[in-house]
Length: 101
Image (cartoon, rainbow, N blue to C red; front, side, top):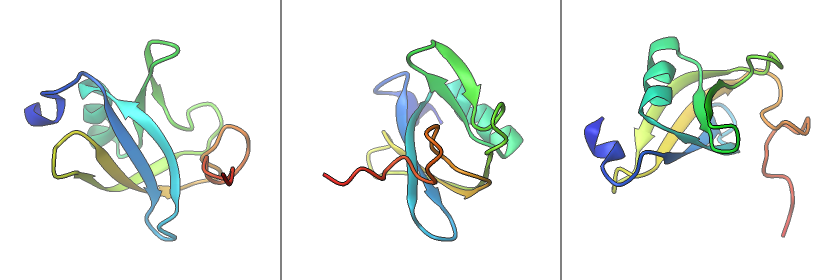
């Protein structure tokens, strides 16, 4: 795990639905949130705006059950494969990626 945080204290985590392969969201993890994710089997992130850890779905019930976690070839980004319960986006959309450019 040390090499994952060698470049930065925060690394981007791409969250993808394991069944549909749809990208659900992008968030940031620090060492503690990754450790909690691995320990609990649910996603934990570092909120840059609030400056604290947060467990996805703790208030909404829209949790993410972690199936697999991969790091990229440079060990500076994570791909977290999840079973999404409910919607991933705080707007009520299933995925945060719904705005076509």
